Length: 225
Image (cartoon, rainbow, N blue to C red; front, side, top):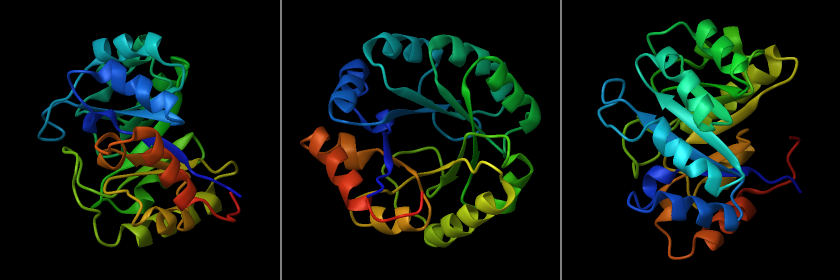
């Protein structure tokens, strides 16, 4: 039985105890840790920077899945890679050229990711579908945790999965972020998601390990990937 990867979003954790929450997520069985990096311009919020990633890196071994919601990601990619990010995702909507961002991420030894917002056509990722390790579909408007799942996101996810499988010789992982929980994770996985970002549905539950286990098991199925 195939099971999705779980990447808890630490922005929904205890911001005064990020290190302990990262350890709790890893010990609880999470596959990755999702780090939302916001600059206050690309989205109306500010989170944290490379120093926070560097502080978390020695505490855990699993993948630091770093999502750059920045107007100019080119100026920060190297710093996040040096801090210990294993996977760095940039937005197709950012100001900097996607080609240059992906090339820089690869040159730093990190895996590459490309993200699209809910209002961006899925075709926007097609030119780079064969060049990235992961595509991230936002199922909320980025900037704040705890939002509701945007209507129509499952259909977008299904169409994006079909696009990636059609145009890529080695289809990338398909990650989804926003409003993910036990009520919709199975439908989301069946639509083609291979990595689930979960914030409140993990870190705001009384038992983090149980929350991770339940998401993975509920989303599991006899799927081709």
